[in-house]
Image (cartoon, rainbow, N blue to C red; front, side, top):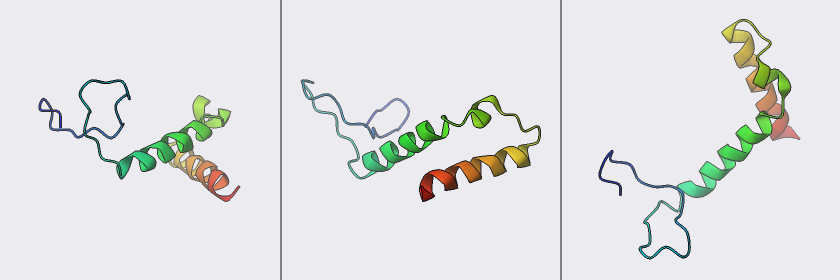
Amino acid sequence: MQEGNNTVPVIPGRKNRKEAVAYEKEKNPKRAYIERLFGKNKENRRLTVRYEKTDVNFLGFILVAFLKILLC
């Protein structure tokens, strides 16, 4: 645990590190899944450029993009 800001690492340390870093093994796969999901979402140009003017329309398109990823 890092003492400076009371956080617990989620990403494992490198294999060649002299002192092993304790991390939460249960959260690492979830973090990796979310990172891949956002990476796939960035492929939609409409999201990265943000053509929608209102926040509601933008959020709606984000939800549609997530559904497209999850269903395909």
